[in-house]
Length: 208
Image (tube, rainbow, N blue to C red; front, side, top):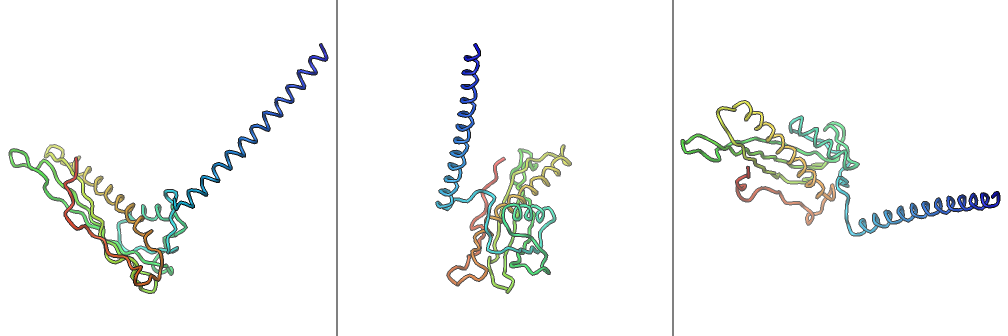
């Protein structure tokens, strides 16, 4: 009996040692697989979402609402090594922003009363380098949303409209950060100059 216990004990120790070695081997293989995948994706030019390598490392922003500036700072600083600074703090580039809201009638009911509005938002932007070099010429991001309306819910619809305007502002900021990534140099050659971007036609009617 004692011999059997010793043998079983020895097998248990052996199995435990084997399991530990197996787990370590699997762990090493998993790490190597992840590392190889990352190298292959990098070689293919793939970039993880949220990671940008902007040509400018210190960006100053002129204009824009506090909410917009807050979101822009979070997106830029959270997804790159670029920091937002004041104009007086020697930025590499200065981004100028102006935004505007609009509203127009989208549809009327049988009695001629407005039942839908179209809300519009336009973000105008441009960027220059610290030496005045034009990096992004004056451009526009245009967005719209549909808002159903009823005189019975005036206050609620007013709140909804503000929410939609804020949503468009944030959407415009997300588009803008991708546009900023197009700038490859703070001193672009004439052949590398970026064109201005603006809607070439009226935006389509927004869906409800």
